[in-house]
Structure formats: C-alpha cells, structure tokens
Amino acid sequence: MSKHVALLRGVNLGGRRIKMDELRAAFEAAGYQQVKTLLASGNVVFKSRKVEADAIEGMLKDAFSIDVPVILRSAEEIAALVAADPFAKLPQEKDTKTHISFLAAPTQPKSIQVPYASADGNLRILALTPGYLAAAVKLTATSGTLDLMDLLGKEFGDGVTTRTWNTVLKIHKALQGD
Image 1 (spheres, rainbow, N blue to C red):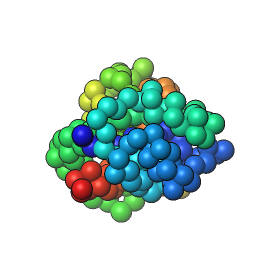
Image 2: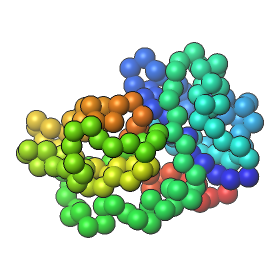
Image 3: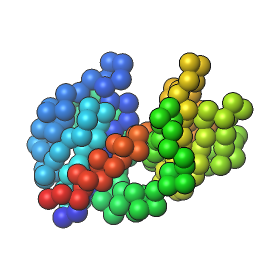
Image 4: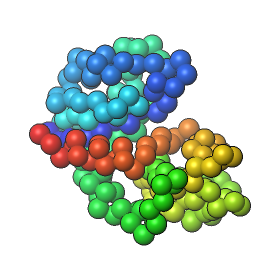
C-alpha cells in the first residue's frame, strides 16, 4: 500500500461545504486506510493499493451530492516538491504569501510566459512544472490571493487547485507519519 493525498478543489467555498469528519468517514467507507484530513480545505491523506481520481470524485458525488474535482499526488511526489523548494531563493517578506497550484494534467498557460510578474510586481509565478506551479503574492490594499486565483482560472482553467506552501509542508509531514 502507498500513501497519497487527495487535493479537493473548491471545498468549503460557497455552497460546497463538507465537514472534515464526514469526509474522513466517506474515505474510510470507500476502503481507504489511515485516512486523515488536514485543515478544512479538502486535503485528505490516506493509504491505498489502487488510487484513481475518478473513483474518488464518484464517491464524493455519492456521499455529498456535489461535484468535487480531485487531484492526487503520491507521498513521493510531495516529498520531491518539498525537496525542490521553489521558494528557497525568494526573500522572506511578511506581506508575501507563497502558493503551490497543483495541475490535474501538464498544461501550459494560455497567454503568459513563466516566470511571470504582474505589471505591479505583486503577483509572480516563479516556476511551472508538469505537476504544479509556484507563485508568490504580495498582499496589498489592492491585490492579494484572489488575483492569483483569477489569473490561474484564465490561464489554466479548472484543472488546478491551490494550497499555501505552509499547507504543502503540513501535507508532507502527514504523509511521512505512519
């Protein structure tokens, strides 16, 4: 059996509410083992012999009557991402948030080049790989994380879900435990 994380897109935003204890119970009822949810944003760490996003999406539809896109990553993929640390050379600034956006499939942006910086420099995409992109957002009175979400929607469509770097580190830690 191997460990994975299911990254659920758009959970607990708007009308797409799922309680984490109910989410954990649904995964366990579907046969996944050592299920643990992290935060309330749809991060589920689990063990399984067979893992398919379509099967999890179907299980979530049956259990909660909502469509929830799922992006899966193995413990090894998350460990490689953390080891690569796309933010290692980024100066640490208290008003800057770092994000990893996981891609459902290798995708190129529609109209921008990576690395990318917005005209005001408050939004930067630092790296793009087949599985994720790394972005930094400077929080100001006129810009923030929603600017990143808008850009991602325009450039990559719905096949992306975003987590803060701190959340990725928590996922990595949970995947390392037994």
